[in-house]
Image (cartoon, rainbow, N blue to C red):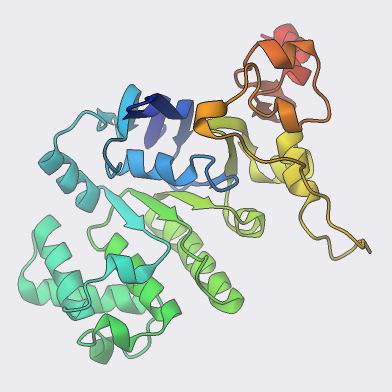
Length: 325
């Protein structure tokens, strides 16, 4: 049973020179206790997908079609106030820079207890106890004292732990984590990743982890969706996508990761750049950069199809997909 279902999601930005389609027919689901990684280059649509789910699309961006369903309830068509309640109670958000999520004028304890009191039926005393326990759970030492400190009194890694505690305050079923480790040292990254994994297991929460770091994906996720130019290029179990990538773009991504066991002078790279939204080519959006194109790639845009243990939007798998359909 899926906790979150995204069905044929289209996000558009109307402008004076026409409408730009930033997300084009994206579909995926996340089960309780599962971590889905969303990976891709800058501009692929990763953060936009997260923003659409938590109802924080920047105007004039809008969900033009499709559905976002959380625990059987459609949430993409809710009003601002209803969505605000869902965002606090049912969806927790962790952003890249903890300073944007924390109010510098309030102690972290006040911010945690206010969130808890808003969404859970507890007394102020119980809310404070719960806030202290959340700080303990997220690995903050001397939580009883630190609860009365302000955000600037915490290091970057500790601030990110506070943000995770804040995201968990109302016991959400879904956590959307957008680049939660990018601004942190590598050693702190590993601790935050372990923390997310433990939370997922102990609370049965579903996590959508947005990142451009395949190392973080490999270490953390159960499944991964690779985005390219606003569409899913490939989706499947993380070990399959990493070890047996089916889409030429994913193959290129994997080949560009340094391998400690191989002695290579240069890293592989994917030539070219991702197309701008107003210049997406006909057919497969990846075709100008792909080394395996043929006529169909230049004419028709592929949908996701069976490709071994994963699903890839690539005509190379069309014959196999039609046989198994």
